Structure formats: C-alpha cells, structure tokens
Image 1 (cartoon, one colour):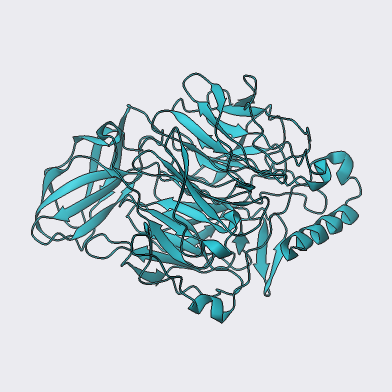
Image 2 (spheres, rainbow, N blue to C red):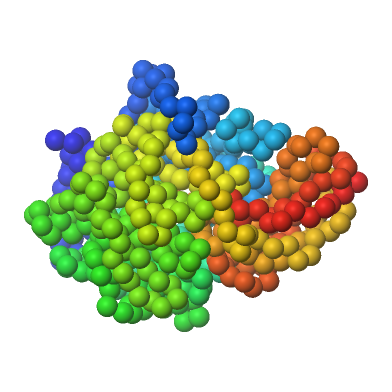
Length: 536
C-alpha cells in the first residue's frame, strides 16, 4: 500500500472519530499526501540530462535548511525580477538573483527572513500583491517538532521585500471550519482580481474574503457558491471574472460537471451553462465511487486566444481535458491524457509561444511523472524534467520567468524549461509613456498597454499559486550588456489579456550602471519593444 495513502486514511479516521457528525455535514476536506522524505544519497544523485534536452538544472541549487522533510518549492516572482522560494513546509525562504546578464540558471541564492514562530505551512495560498508585497495564507499542514500536522491552519503572513520582514495577518473572522477545527483556511484558493484586490477562499467551507491590503482587514464576498472550495482552482479571465471547476466535495455526484464564475461587480458566484462537457474532477465513478474518490482537479490555464485549457484527475484511468472559451462561455472536450495519466494536483504554465506546459502522473498521487505541451490543437509529450522518474505531479510547481523560461521545482531540484519558438508581437506589452532619463535610486512612473500579460502565467490545482500577471521593468546597459530589474509596485490594474491603459511605479536600483541603456516592460516572459533611456 502507498504509505502516503495510508497516512491519508489514518487522518480521515481520526477526524471522523473526533467529529461523528461529519458524514451528515458532508463537508470534510480531502487530505493531500506529504512530500517524499529524502536521504543524502537521493540529493547527491544529480540527474543527467541529454545535451538536446530543453531542461537545465540550475548551476547553484538552493541551500535550503531541511531537504529531508521539506525541499524547494512554491516559487514566487518578486517585482524586482528575483525569485522567492520556500523550503516548502519549513520556515526558511530563499531568494534567487539572476547573474549580471540576466541568467537565472547561473543565479545565486541568499536567505530571506524566516516565517514567524509557529507558522510553517505546506500547501497554502500565495499571491504577489499590487504593491509588491507577498502574502501567504493557510496551509493544509503545519510543520512543528519535526512532524507535519494536518490542521488546515487559519494563519497567514505578508512579506515585505524592502524590509525583509514577515507580518502575521489575522484570519477572516467570519470564516468557518469543520469538526475539531472551528476556523480554517488550509490549502486555499487565492487570486488578485483585476482591480488589485486579493481574494481568498476557505478551503473547507463556502466562505470567501476580500483583503484591504492597507488595513489588513477582510470583507466577505462570494455568495451562492455551489459547493465548498476544497480541491478547486481559480482562473482569472479577460472579462474580470474568475472561473472554477466544481469538485463536488460535500455534494458528491458521480457524473457532476458543473463550473462556476465569480462576478466581482456583484460579489456572487453563478453556475452558467451546461457544464464542462467532460468530468474534470476525480469522482472514481468507475472504480468504487465516493469511497475511493480523491475529488482532485488539475490546473486550468488561460491562453492568449482567450481559451482556458483545463486538466482533470481520474482514479480509474486517463484524465480528461476540456477547453473553455472565455468569449462565448462554451466548453468543448479536449484530448484525454494517454495511458492512465492525469493531473491530481500539479503544475502547468503558459509558455511565451502560447503553449501550455504541464506535469502529469499515473492515477492519484503516483509516480513517475510525464510532461506535455498543449498548443491549442494537440497534446504532445515532451522531454521529462530532471527528476521526473521519482516525481508525482503534486510534487511540482512552475513559475514563468522574465527570461521566458519556466522554472520548475519538485521538492528535490530546481530547473528551468526552455520553450521552443517565440511569441506573437500582439501579446507583448506596449510602452506609451516612459522617462527618457533615470537615476540610480530614483522612482518613476511608466504606462502603456498589455502590462499584465495575456494570462496569470502558471497554475496548480488548488493551492500554491504562482501568478505573474504584473509588469516588470528591465534596464540593460548598452556598453556592458548587464541586466538590472527595477522594483515595480502599485500597478493600476492586474487584469489579464486587457487592452486597457495600465501604469505602474518603478524604483531604479542604486546599483544601476550609468550610461545609455535599453528599457523594456516584461509580462509573463514577453518583453515590450525597447525604449532608449539614459541613466545619469
């Protein structure tokens, strides 16, 4: 028996005993397995890659403090072009800084402030706020005294990259919970809406909240939710709405195919249309039913043509996929994964060329993993990541880098995928107004269109979001070729695939080299046309 599934059974039995009414409540959240424990030999066995492989291991792997229990994961792109990465499940965090020529493969690591005492989450909500700070909320597990405790914690914290400090955030006071956990956030969904407001779900109820990032106070939203949020993912659409595929936790229907849209103007969920055409959540309908259902759903990624490629999980065989047309609201079936592959939680990311890269594995929580690309018409297997033979899809996280590469973590190693092809120029940011002269340490405003890109960039099943729908400013010195990122903040909008006018502030680093330079705005790995700028 898979030891992770055995652990899941133990926890389920414990909670059932602790809360006899849980069956009637029909709202018990499903527990995702823990990451694999790793010994020294596993970490020393650096995977070999073929010379033609599109994958590259980072030259310097992160020196996280606890590879055995935790390991690198939950990558976050800060607005100064560096990558923030968790020792996933432990309290230490790290920063990857690209080298002088903008290479993340040859970048270096520095340790950031650790999370406050008592908060060490695994499988939590994550977002970069419009002011450039990072918020993490909840956690399916909390790590203490060398043990992961399944508590669906309601803790949260905001990281200030300027001060290198974490501040605890009180949970929404109106969130509920279940059984021995009166208030939960857990492995929650989150999204930054088009207007820059952070929206957070309670994994284990129908509760949803909006955060005032200045006062750190919460307001309820999200009325009329069909089922509890557990296992579902959120995708921000060009029309400002949020798409979710229902996972039927607490409302089991072996053939259910409903989806919902969150309408920001009304603060309500609605269930339009005839459903997703194929079932994307795992009901185990053909191999035992509810007792064996994981209720997992795969990631759903918005592409530049306005379609959302949604992936499914299936305990009984191959996972299904479906395509949602965000312009018409119509679903069409996509190709099934081959064999018994699916994505029962796992990463996917939009490449600059418009294809979606994704990680699948057999049935529910098994190894090994297989990687695919969807180009809008064909699902094609691609070269495996460095440690794919030891990975299940839920180990993985992806992040779209400003270089156009896809950063990948799996609790073991950090690598990048180099997509083929290039982007359509119509998808690129367009600068309308920019300063002709800047100074090191100065702060400026830049504006234009497509500053947030055509998509959120990357997605995962329900937690550990890694959206990059915000502008970065990159200045390259003409004489040296050295690359510098200015920290952006206070974006006027976070909407995706929008032709609307957007502005942001950028702070030129004090280390910026003087002289004639080229400035670009980058969103989801796609740069604007360069404009000349003088650094005086």
